[in-house]
Length: 188
Figure 1 (tube, one colour):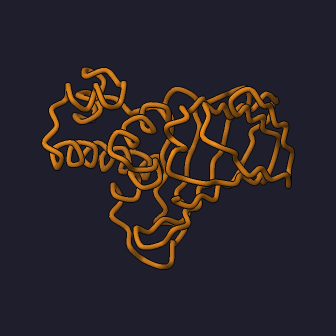
Figure 2: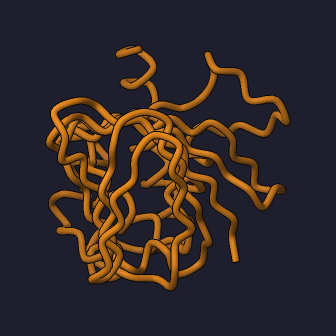
């Protein structure tokens, strides 16, 4: 799986540069639009560092894409069948969070993502990452605490949450065991 993660990181670095160049944006302009430091973007594009989930969401939003949309463009997949062996996997270097793009096509309104959140880890994503999508989350195994704005949701295996209006959202595994969950999202 590490080879697949490395390949995804390389494709993602290339895609970020392509998206920026397609818009004729300088590194400074992308930095300003995304709130990500110019030096960080440069290192990502050169493949020197792997971006965290938060940074990827900010870059995707600057390009007017969802995170899944950016990852799908990086992979270039267009098949109707999403084979497990071909699904892009991305690893957040800051938390160990593993994100598998189960299904995403540019011509289909639904995306499905499978996430493995290590014990004791958390990721906070800005409200801007939810501005153009609607999503629901299903906990497959373990427990997950989602804080949307100021509202806390404690979820266990089999629990599902339909997200509300865009708000800064924290996904936290406060337990001592990993948590696995699915996210289904639709572009609005």
